[in-house]
Image (cartoon, rainbow, N blue to C red; front, side, top):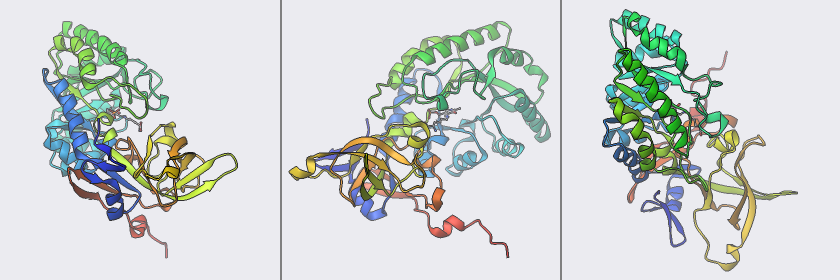
Length: 419
Ligand code: LLP
């Protein structure tokens, strides 16, 4: 469910025609629907409302300050993976006690920053990180809140690049080792090991990988409890999948129904770290067709957005629906063309969609790439010295510029010419 719908022949973002936004702000343009992501956040919140649950929105999915701020207002905490993401969360006034920090490579500088900020806990991915945290705590005379991220060796049945819970990946600590670490927690004088974290991957549409995970994890926690190791938090990470094309993902309620029976008895506070589920379908990327090019074997629509703006198709062969911003009424325009929609970047992998049936598209027409809210802008780059695009948020009938389009000066701002 989202708020990008046609009214007649015109695509709207909530109550604003998308073509008006393109006219006002130019293209390419990321357009967000605030109502969509707030509703998605509330779906998860409500599904787990009968348990004490902290929902830490995963900042990496989309870190625009206005997105973070709107979610903060709804009570969200934040899942961060860098000093930069912490900076963003603090910038919108997030409560540090609702911030959890994951990632395999936290630097000493980042650890100190997060300790000073007083975050809820670090999701620790290795023994050496545990030692580094203990040392940092000692230096700053602080007790550091910690959860061990375990690797449950569960296959999330998603794209290999976004699978994180199997033994082959760099993430987490294997369960046997983690068990020993929990038992020897007292040897780390400046740590309070109070949680268990697990994140098995992303764009998971079925409940089964979660069930397999929570079964393993709950037994693990029960075994620890028998030995007198008491935890306070169980963090199940993110990963709830969304509809890009024909997927039939479980709903927030179904995920909750599947997970809760295994965790309620543990008497722990639950933490979730959804990113894509909240923001994924809450944005479209609006792009203009620059050229219509007839190739030997294929027809191409060359757009003003490329892989530097949305890298998911190039990187994971991800499918994003592409639809016209205005549907023509003329009979001859209703015929379908068959296109590869490609960007202007000098790489063969620069495409937004391949083999797409679209109404005959003319140069200058606008297209909307759906499902562009998560890992869209946040993974964008300046490759080919292209300015990163503007971002706009729509709330009902109002639109707000939430990031200006970059300028050429921005591109070279930090560079120096050696004299
Ligand atoms: N928690 C942790 C520890 C994570 O590593 C991630 C995502 C999340 C939460 C949020 O996962 P989500 O709910 O959004 O699935 N760039 C890829 C996705 C990479 C996900 C990385 N970790 C893509 O575009 O599909």
